[in-house]
Length: 152
View 1 (cartoon, rainbow, N blue to C red):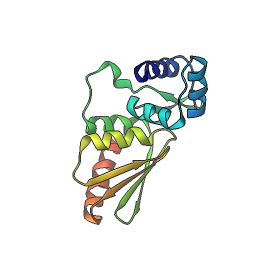
View 2: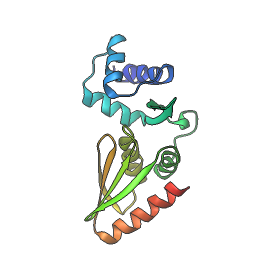
View 3: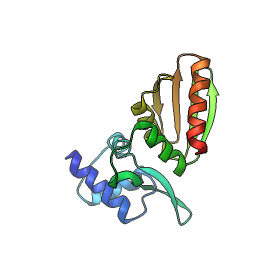
């Protein structure tokens, strides 16, 4: 069922603009799929959907790399940062990234996949990502790495 639902999600975001998880849930119901908000959120993260601007509206889109070999976490971060804006903030030993709604999960998944030693763990919301670091020095190294990727 999960594979069928995720295939339906891919089809939906390719066929029409889907702005919110609620719109996605309604579109899935129209196709006979019932899913909770938590399930849809996990699907969005697993499919690495991102928000892109189309006709002045932020909508979900498939990552451009689907036809390419699976990239490393660092390459995925580079591609995400190329496509979406990110703001960096610090809160003690936590690096906070603020981005477009619907994009934080994809960034967290890519960072987790990169397995950088500076990042102890991540927690992602809709547009905000918390990255726990062991200490302020690790945070500074991580922020530098991410800012370099974001700068291109």
